[in-house]
Image (cartoon, rainbow, N blue to C red; front, top):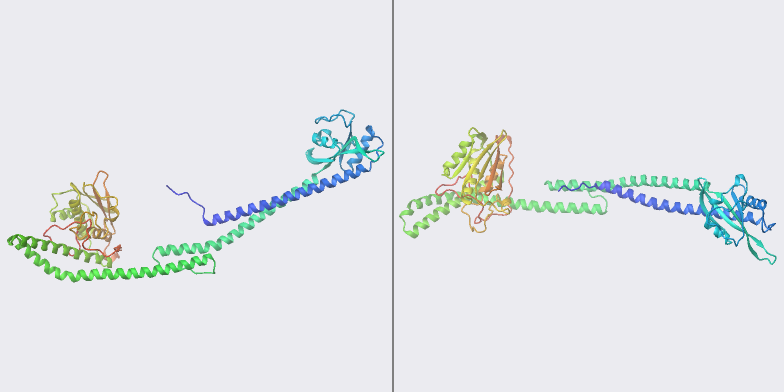
Length: 528
């Protein structure tokens, strides 16, 4: 499953800064906008109510408690002032108030042509409140603009200085367009302020991400170099913040890792040198033992029963020990980087047949090797690889065992297959490990336990590879891929050997091929 792409750290920091700025600017600007708007409208309506109340107080005392049309017009004109709209309405205070439509003709008189206020604009709830003797106001939209309608009843002062509702209602309207323009200008300034704050936040985010991502990138570069084996990589420590602490921790970790790796390399070099020295020192006495073993083999048939078995056992174990020493010497050559190819032009079909014929396997192995396939390879090392693979298949697999050759312009492929149960999945990754025991049931393997490891190193020395897998219909399949032209020694062939995880125990077994009885192993590394 392909992971979904995620935003980089820079993009996330920029987004976080921008989001924080937008939210903060919106909250502050919105709050200030609402407070300023409410304050403007409150001051406007308070001033309008106070002005209308003052104008109405100038009308007292009223000439009549039941004004006619002319007097209602004078009252409306006085309430409207210079730039307002007004209407005066007279009705019996005990009569019911209609739910909204204007009163019948004759009960409402506009205060002038320029001061006309449609009674239908006045909300019915506002009229009910005013009819109850209270001063009230409400903002409405009239003629596509906001207006403030103020309603006030006119009171009649009795002789005993008490007041009562006269039944005259005065409604004055004042345009709120100037205030609306002020509020719109305030909103525009709030948007501009928010935009400027957003730009400033993006600039701060860029500076902040540069200061944060610079050390992070340097840390990532150093980590990559450290992973590639540059153990002397260090980071410059700047300041005393958290990033500086991370840099110091990285440097301490890298120094400690370098020290441990140096110690491990020194121990590994000592161990390899020890194995190589011991193997070379054992070679001479083993040659003498091999000669004695040959004599014992020849005389075993004439010895009594216990003695002949002991002689054969000594001979076989001498051969096994010689094979182990020779394989250890070969492995030490790979580890020290002195293993070299001796390439020659080789007929692959003839090489396969010769490998099988020399070991007596020609009748037991099926071959599919087309004629005319040539390659420039080291025939001795290819023989070692093929002998080890076929020997393993014959010993640990089930017949039929087959060898198949394929070729293309750039490489050749050799497949060695058996039809046994195959290898367990847990075993496959370790087949080419040194001294790996494929089956715990075998307390000891007849081979040295290094055969497959040597085979793979020989393949890599050719700049090829050796792999293993299980066939779908059963059996293990070893696949050897080699270039048609192996590198010459003067071309600087690169050889890479994976060092063993620990010093091997010669008594451990491995997926390995024993040599045919009675045949001395190849000193330069053969199957085992």
